[in-house]
Image (cartoon, rainbow, N blue to C red; front, side, top):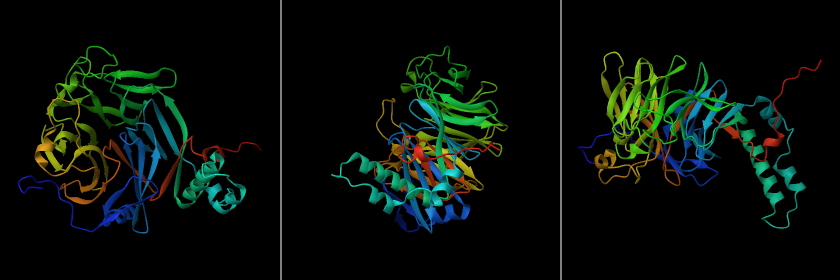
Amino acid sequence: MTDDTPYSQAPETPYKEASSANEFASQYQSNFPKILEALGISLVVSSYQSDSLILIRSKQGELNTSIKHVKLPMGLCVSHERVTVSSFNKVTDFKVSHQSRDAISSGQFDDMSTLSKKIQPQTEQNSEHEFYKARAAQINAVKACDMLFTERTSLTTGFINIHDIAWGDDGLWAVNSSYSCLVTLSPNTGFVAKWKPPFISELKPDNRCHLNGMAMLNGKPRYVTTFSQCDSKDAWRENTKGTLIDVNTNEILLDNLCLPHSPRCHEGWVYVCNSGEGQVLKYNPISKKVVEVCTLPGFTRGLTFLGDLMIVCTSTTKETKVSGKTTILHALQSEKTRCGIWVLNKHTGEVITHLEFTENVSQLYDIAVISNSTFPEFIGNEDALSPHLFDFLMEIK
C-alpha cells in the first residue's frame, strides 16, 4: 500500500487461521473471536460466488467458520429468532428450534459410536454409510452449538434476481433486480410489485438500472441504491453513475456513486457502500451532507451495526462486463484487494479487527448479526438429520 493511498488501517495484532470443516480457508486477527464472545454474538454472511452461507462463530478464544451450501444466496435478514435468506429462485426461513436441539443434547439421537456399529459398508463409497456419517456429524455439530436454526418455510419466486431483503410492516420486502422494482412476497402470486424508480417506464425482467440495495425505516422501505438511471435492458452495464433514491418522494439524493450497495438507516443518517471506491459513506437527509466514514481495501458490500460498531464486508475486484474499471483498482495500485469482514468504530472509521478469506471465497454480498449466540448451527431440509427434527405444540388434553 502506498503512503498516498490511505485506507482505514487495522491494528497490528497476530493473525490466526480459523478452524473449518471445509475448504473455505480464512485468517483473522486474534481479537476477532474475543470481541464476538464479549458481545455474545455470531455473524452470518452470504457468498453467491461460492453458493454458501457462512457462519462466523467463536469458542474459547478461537474462531470457527461453518458453511451451509445454498444456491446463489444474496440478501439476509435476522429477526425474532429467524434467519431469512434469498437465493437462486426462492426465499427461505430458518427458525430457532429449541425442541430439536434439546432432544439431541439429551441423548434421544444415536451418537457416532452407536451409529458406527449399525453400519457395515462394503466400500467407502457405500451410500448408506455416507448418509449415516453425515447424520452423525450433524448430531455432533448440534450438540456443540448453542442455538440451532432449522429450515421451516420457503417461497419459490422464480429467478427474479433478489438482492436485499427485510421484514417490515407489510411482511417480507425484497429488491427485485430483474424487474427493477421493490416487491413484497406472496405465496399466491410469487411477488407483488410495490414501487419502481421514477425513470423506469415499465416492469419487464430486463435488469435495466440494477436496483440492488434497500434501507428500511419505521417498518417500510425508505431508500434504495441503483447502478444507473437507465431504462433499457441491461443498460446499467454501459452507464454506471450510481444513485441513492428516496422511495417516499422519488427524489434522487445522490447521482454520482460508483456501483453502490447496502444502504442502511442508522441514527438519523443513511449509510451506503460506495462499493467501487471501497468506501462507506453516510448521508444526512436534512442537511444533505455526505461524510466518508472509511475506505477499505476491497469492494465494499454488506453492512450492519451493533452498538458503536460498524461491520462491513469487502470482496475482491474482478473483471466484469461493466464499462470501465472500478476506481478501487487504481487506488490500490499493485496491492491485492481483499475478501473479508471488517469491524470498525462507526464514529471514527477506525478498524478494530478483521477476518480475511484466503481460499475459494472472493465475493460476499450481505452480513447480519445473530444475537445471544456465539456458536449457532444451521440444518436445511436436504440435510441427513432434517427428517428427524421436530417442533410442535401439544394441545391434546
